[in-house]
Length: 439
Image: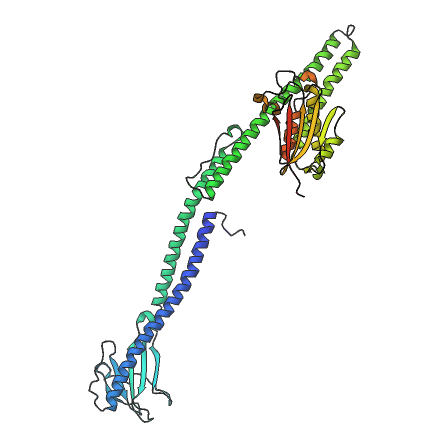
């Protein structure tokens, strides 16, 4: 709806004003109606009381002249069957008959409101003095308050509805504005944050409401984004460095051969170029796999982790697996994870590789251990970094890209699990834990 205001503050204020007008208007209609009926009932009751008193005096033939009036009733007349005024109060003595209202034959009393013009109205009560049809009538007329007969009461009620609705709108405007002020501060801060200053955070209100939780969640998101961007920058820097090495080697070999073509061993130059090309291809393949992990582009399925370990295992690997340890995930990614762990064990583990698959509680656990020099406790997290290598026996000359363990951990975590390096009696031991498939 194009006509509907876009601002939450304006929308809430308009809705509050409309609701207040409807509710207060209905209340005002009910109150004014009740007030009218109550006042009219009181006036008619007083007029009827006076009429019955005068009727009793007429029957007892002791009517004073003029008829005494009360504090609220001044217009009193006794009218005969011909319509002639027989007795009257002082204020009604010189007036024509106050009303032509007569009780019905089956009742002594009749009453109604009669108006002369738009604002002059009277509550009229006509009472037959006896039960007989030829009896005289006592007619009492009481002026109605002008607030009840004109539009005064309606105007007052309308003004009250307008004032209270305006007050509700003003209060809503203030409350919503105060509520949205932290959100506006968050919006301004978020609008000012760019990729170069992700360290900035949005202000958190001193409360524990939804807005404070929104601010804390925004700050947590910014923190994760800052870490992701920093990691991406570091990864780009490391990738550039790793790619530069084989490219530089390839260029040096080719330039050297071109400078002295007569002395160059072109077969060896070709082999060196192929080695560097293979390394470039391996790095690019790993980088592509890293970008695809967790992207949801592959089909996940349930499969037996022990069966995968048997099918993807290699000669010389000691297997100790059980069947029925089922997990959910992308099968070929876990095959790559397992292959990376075996590659790492073969490259640095001394040749003795042990693989064990078990179910531990609600987790599927795979252990890949070797008999190599092991990993110092202080380096057990660092080895999972991209292009990270330890100082001892873990160099690029052994053929690795420096991405194997990083890829393996990313695969595990993208499936709700984890991959860690744990203590072992000898060598390194990598432990994969995954949620097990129920049933």
